[in-house]
Image (cartoon, rainbow, N blue to C red; front, side, top):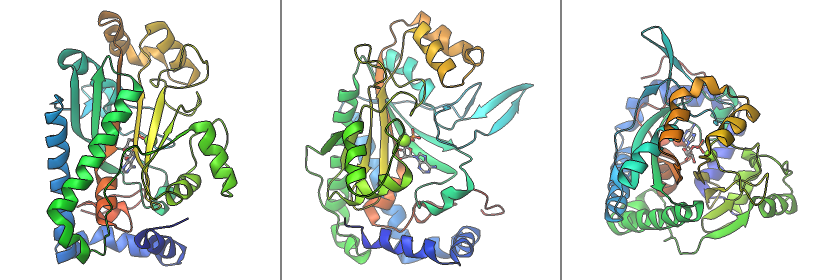
Length: 346
Ligand code: AMP
Ligand code: MG
């Protein structure tokens, strides 16, 4: 188990009584640190990472598409976070927790697409202790028409490898100032099925339900156990949103994946093949507690564009920046950071 020093420092900070106060001040007076040399560099690296992402995806034939900001529905599969709502001319609209449901028809139109989209999630209060959860964050959201989740994993692997190399080439010297020893990613990344990773977590002393997402604690341990990125694939049904496709040959097994950064930085990416049979989608909605009548346009779209078979993933931009720069937490990787329950900040 090897935690990056910045991750270890974060753990120490969290265990102090004064942690909440430290974070509140960090958020409340964010101009004070954002104007320091260190963070000027961080935000330049963030801009370069976005440039690298666009360069890579554009070179692979992806088309950047503008994402919606609000809509009648948004991603319900957000692990305990709440959605924010606005009054849209008398109709309750949601602010995008992720624009996942809106990617599919533009993928049908253009083949391979991506958003650079702002997301809002009212995360639970305990999320301020993970170092990985903001309330406002950006996601690069990728979708491939007629792709499989293996295709999406392949793009994720090549994309992150490209970005790390780009930043090393451009900022190698400056990264030393951040005490960041950034290793190039080597393909193939580690790969475990969900079943295998739960067993590994148990062997490392972290108990995880066999039918659920990795807990935040086990995710951190699996991440720290590896010196290179880790794919976890085929999550059990019930652990993810209704849109992750269930394998028709293996009921209960989802055709999806996560990618974790090494060194204890935790989750980088979630992705999947999409459920697209309208009747099956309705069944999955019901099973996950969603009311299909709220998803009228989505179901109509699935019928009209049948078979709307796509796969894709989302990568968080602040988490990527945290990893590239070796920062303590995501709130150091974003101007105007917002965390659960902390109000009155820029
Ligand atoms: P999800 O579909 O919930 O896994 O979100 C997709 C990606 O967005 C994740 O893999 C993270 O990189 C990022 N992400 C999700 N939630 C947050 C959050 N609260 N703060 C920062 N990044 C997030
Ligand atoms: Mg996820």
